[in-house]
Amino acid sequence: MEWINYVSYFFGGIFLANTIPHLVSGMMGHAFQSPFAKPAGKGLSSSTVNVLWGAFSMAVGYVLIVRVGSFDIRNTAHVATAGIGVLLISLHSARHFGQFHGGNSSRKP
Image (cartoon, rainbow, N blue to C red; front, side, top):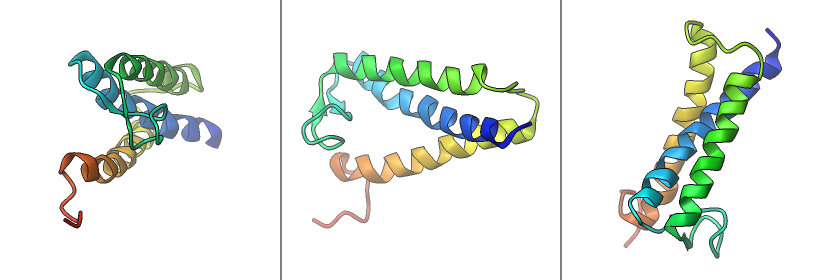
């Protein structure tokens, strides 16, 4: 297996995890931060924009994991590589979005 496949699985995990907050917020009709907001990543985007961004992230994640290389769900290295991408973006998102939604305990009053 080439190393580039592992890079693809890592970023595929990032995109798949990024799908969740945008798709869920959009489906609930809530505005949420997105790259298209002003300022990017801090301002709020409409629920429709978030559904579209979530769907796009899901499609990119699918392509990076399923269509690149030969991802095997039974291969621990493949799953761990994608899982590390999921974990890292989740931790980053928790800290970043926590400052806007009260979930960051290190936020100064």
